[in-house]
Length: 371
Image (cartoon, rainbow, N blue to C red):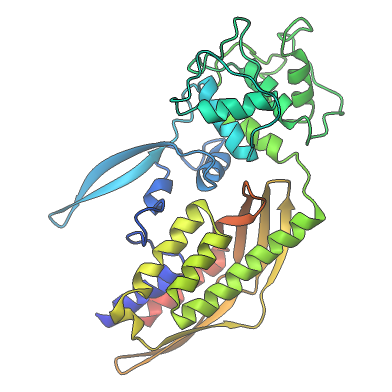
């Protein structure tokens, strides 16, 4: 029925449903479907953030389900948060999270070949003095990383951008003779690493979730700038305003360009999905109009050197349809919070948008009432 199809298109356009990706070369919504981490996991928020912001990819798993006699294939992502993590894997996450580029130090390791997936990440980290290798000159990329080794790498990586002058915190099992003593004391002093009571367990192998938690805490210790504040608001306001404009004009080329310039990761994949129905000739002929009502207001909730949260209030849109078998005029509130990350070239982009819970429920009720 036309009513159902139009309702589906409406929900899709505002990111409430997903469909087949518009561009095969782009990552799809399936690439961000987190399947092995529950909401009550202690690191859920951080794991989701790193996945949605393309800092980590996870392990893709394909499955098949049956519905009404038909079989459908789906893809989910496993992050395996309780598994150990190798030195190469941790290096990749750290480099990606900080948007690091090659530094001035030239160092190579005999066990890190240019054909290996981790070669560039190790080269970047070593060129910035974050990793120095073993006594024998090797890096041991596939060895499991210990909690002490992680603390050292984080301390070296963030030392230029995080204030470590606060009084440190000591642990009974990390003495001054330990190679990681300063790093553990200083990072614990600002809350980047946590212990187990009076112990740190420096020689224990780190879990993947612990690695992401530590890096995330460090990222949120970095200070943003006034220029960042301006750029973040400009990105959000441009995305909101121009999306309404181009959607109303059904200008898919302009929308695609806008999404690539203002969004990334999960939200880019989500946004590109909406172009599928706008490209549908049957949908394009419908007399649906969308107009933003009044002016929305954007203000920063939190901002650091690489991540930001922006609250968007009073984001209301009037949606109208005038067809012989469907005629409606409704107002939808899309207020919510935009989550952004600074990319390698210094551009801020939205990687997620979460609607206010009450407004989201009201929006669904309003949309469903149309049918």
